[in-house]
Image (tube, rainbow, N blue to C red; front, top):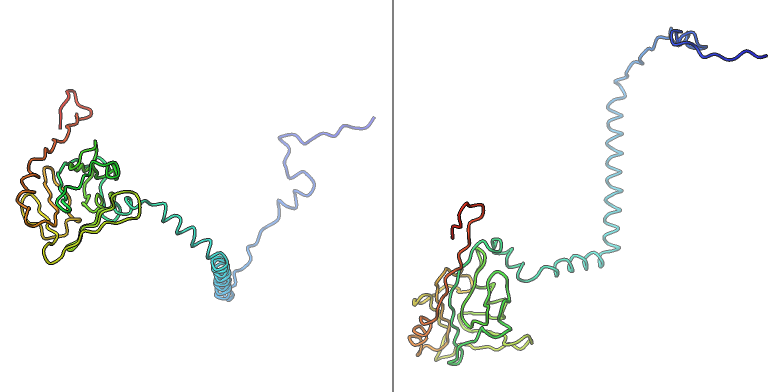
Length: 247
């Protein structure tokens, strides 16, 4: 019968195994560092880095020029995905929706007739500033920093010192009402002549705005504008309060 192979006991030294004694008596000597080759190694590493960067850059620019049309098209598409309203909101640093709430009345008179903002194409055209509930004159502003330009752009209205441009429907037809020798564009804010660009103005609660080309009837229009009712801003209860406190 052959003898069974027996593994060394735990108490047996690892050095009793074949080859371990020699390893246990081996002394490791650290090779001497040659400082003469260090600058050369650094220069070599720097050169490799420059070459690698050049290769990567060449590959990137080659990819761009080979796919330039596709990349540019994607950039344009991403830009188009931003709505005109959001572009203006970013431009004017408009606050978050609900950061403000104000009501104002506006009267635009063209050829002796009030422009009816109660028509569907003028209603709720912007979330930040708009007409609603088929009201023909009452502006609702729902954020800070919102200029009238955001309202005008949303409904296709443009006011200059010489002309009033308005799109009556969703077609591309634009109606122009421009000044001549007998009439110019008049803008009044709270009964006073407003000489600045009205599109850059941010309404305050209870403001009344008149825009007309009819100089002879301004006093009549202002009186009519004063008859418009401007509703109070609804009050909201404070959150996390023991009692319902209105603000």
